[in-house]
Length: 232
Picture 1 (spheres, rainbow, N blue to C red):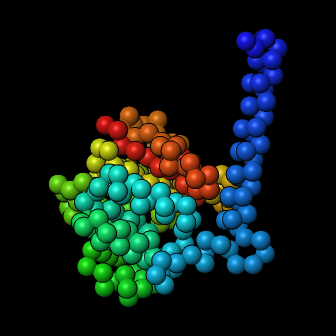
Picture 2: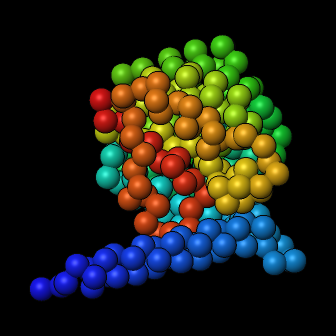
């Protein structure tokens, strides 16, 4: 049996180890996000030749989520080149069902491979425009729905997206807020309030969503506190 002194020492040692591990993970996240003087790693990622601009560890988590929760449709706010959109569509191909609805303020950068995929519907316009929200809502009606927010990363914009799209998410599915690592969490410390701050303000207003920390278990994630599971 441990003496009180040895028990205290063990607890302190465990606390120190956790702090050291957290420090290492955050530093690596920062270095991975910003690069080391050359190309920024996440800007060099692609899916079958289409730029994706994602952390590969998060993409692995995405496939686990899709297989586990089996949504009928994934709404992706923010498409850019379309690499992640195509990735999601290919996962649905493997699973034998599912559609991706991608919206962006402009679709001029979207690769032809993405435009041509039959599981992908692309909509041009602001994700928070009332007409866009109404259109996406109509397309998701009666379908098991998952939502990914990855467009404008300002706190105000993400907060508006959370209010607009959180009701679409089906119980047991995910609302994923991308790039919560910016504004010093730990990347881009000068970014200003962004996705992370929007999430922190959103969660106290709802009992429907919880942060799923298991989605962060691969240690490097661009979405800390951003994997929101709908529980009610």
